[in-house]
Length: 418
Image (tube, rainbow, N blue to C red; front, side, top):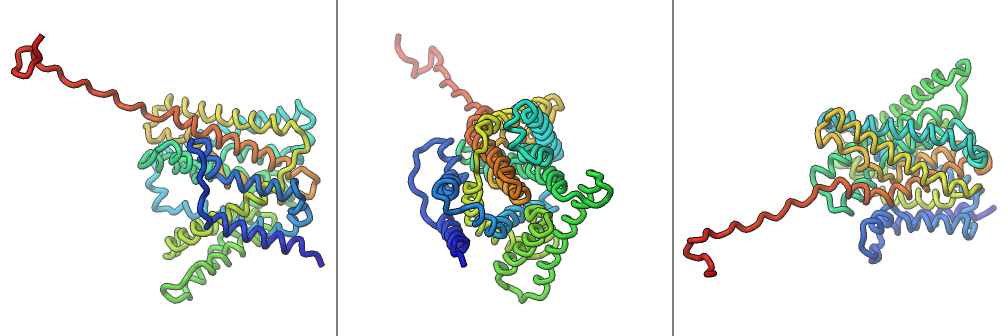
């Protein structure tokens, strides 16, 4: 009997609890430092040290802890799904929805084409991003997604609050939903559906199974809510529901993130305990995010140095696509509040890393294939986090000019004597 997985699991639990409860050490001031620190850069480095560094979180240990990774993915997916309550969605301006779809689509197409050309022109990248088509589609889905929490962090770093920050966070939520929907395509390609090998039919069948599983998980929570006494504590019930959804998604290759996101969206639209659900998800979010960052850092590998070149290039192309979407929004004469997407939603966070980790869980058995894609995702996220404060500051309104004091009339009683 080996105690490696047990010690690793205990270590992850301690890291998650301490990361959420210990006081923050003083850091130098500055938007970039604040954003990287808030996004969990230290925890990512800790995972890198525990994994490739001291070889404590080895590949066999991480494979044994795959259910823990699935639970973290499911929790992040539930947090995203809990944002999509219909009564809130109805308040989204139509222009914001149009621009978010435009921005996500532009980033998806540009990164997909560029990554495909890069894999053909550089054989080392082509051999690292395997299987080729699912890897390219995953990178494109990551480029389409944003990070509502990361965007809010950047907004605080550049001192933007109020309605402007809320509008950008709404656009980031919509872009992240678009990225999650695009992620279903490479996940569906993992196991070819027996319907004649048709990719489109296989994707639709996978999506039907994923939606059905998410609805089933949501119905489990709704059933518990009907029989529970009034004023009951929903932490344990929600934890069991997310664990159930993550288990279904992991066991059936349906993505714990997608299944739990659908379940949470159903719960917040039907259950009367929607506020308690959001509160519980938010309470445990820092611990789950810390565990996710450590696992991602431990899985990072560098099979070729070309990944260090590809990641910032992909991030730059994503930023360019978002800038083009802003230009198109001005051409279409969308209102100012509707142009909240684009460069303001460049920042990415745990959701983008969850996309890469989901790919790594599915394709990790094929050597360093899953880790290479995850490493590329980590590089893109870090580049986006560093560029986000600068790009946002380009759109900050200029301060109003000072109004000069009115001059006194020449013949007034208080006029100075020449």
